[in-house]
Image (cartoon, rainbow, N blue to C red):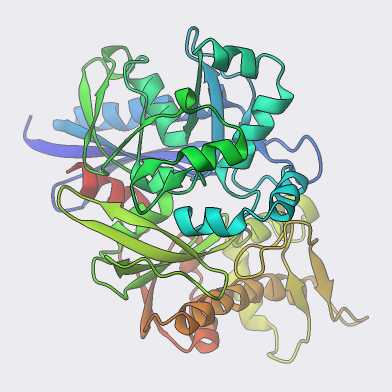
Length: 446
C-alpha cells in the first residue's frame, strides 16, 4: 500500500455518501447511495432503518474497493449524519421496532403543546439550549414508546436501545459491541445537558423516557469501536463522529469564535462558533455544542431552516415544472427583479426563528402573467430570505459577522450566492470542496 486515507461516511437525509480522503484532504474515491423517504401522513416523515443501513454498507464497500484498487489503505473511519432522526431497536435481535422518524417529522406537535402548557420549556431551554419543538429527538422517542405496544415492555426488560443515526450505525457496524454517540448528536436530543455534558434525569422524566435505552456519550475524536470484518473484510477503527452541521463547521475550518457557516442541503443550517461561551438566544435560535476534541469544547448558536434544497426537489418531483437542478440558475437569471411572487416553504412547518410546526406552505403574488419561471425563482429566493432571518437573529444575539462560509448542493448556483450576499449583506465564501460535511468527519477521524 502506498497511501493512507480516511473513509468518511456522510449519512444524509436523501442519500448516503462514502468518501475516502488523503491526509491533505484530497478526495480519493466517492460512492453514493440514494435513500427513500416515507410519508405515512401529512407532516410525518420516516425512513426504513434497514434501507438506511444498507445504503451505508453498500457505499462503504464501494468506496473501500475503489481505494483498494488504487493501493490506498484505509486507516480509520469517520461518521457524520442527519441529526435528530430517531431509531429505536431491540438489542436482542438488532431489529428496529419502528421506522426511523426523520428530523423533519411533525407528528409530535400536539405533545409539544402539552409540554408548553406544563411550563417546562424554560427548564428544557436552560439545560439543552433547544426550543420545545417536534424537531428534536426526545418527543419522537416518547411517541415510539407510547404508540408501539412492545416498546415499554422491552425497555422494562432492558432489551431496548435508542440512537440517533450515528449511534444506530455504530452499533450495527461494530456488530452490537458499542452503543455510543458523540456530544454533538447528543446535544440535539433535548435530553442532554450541554452544561454538565450528561444525560439529564429531570429531562428524561419530563419526556417519560427510561435512561437504560440511551447510548454512552463520547468526545467527537474518541474511539467508537472497530467495524466488523464482515463489512469490509478487515477490522478498521471508527474515530471521529459528529452531527452533519457540526461536521460541516469543522470541514469549513470555522475554529475561531464568531466564524459562521451555512449548509444548503435538504434544509439550511447556519451555525456560528461561539467558543467556550453558551449564548442564550433571545431571538429564537438554539444553543448547541459545536465540537469536543481531546482538550477543547466549543459551543455554537444555530438557526435551522427545514426546507432549502428540499423545496427545489418539490418543484422537480411533485410539480414536474423543471427536469433537474441544473436548469435553476438559468431560469433565475431570466426573471426580472420585480416579479412580486413569494414562496413560504413551510412544507414541514417553519423552523428558526419562527418555530411554527403547524404552518403550511404558501405562494403569494400569483397573477395571470405568472409562469413557472417566477415560481422557480421565488423558491430559490425564499432560501435567502430565510437565511437572512437567521443572520439577523444572530446579530441581535451579539454575534459579530462579516462573512459566511457556504457549502451544500445549492451553492453550485452562483445566482443564488449573489442574491444571498445581497440580502444578508455579507461576504459569501464558497468552499473549495463540495464535500465539507464528509471532510469534517474525516478531519475528526484523521
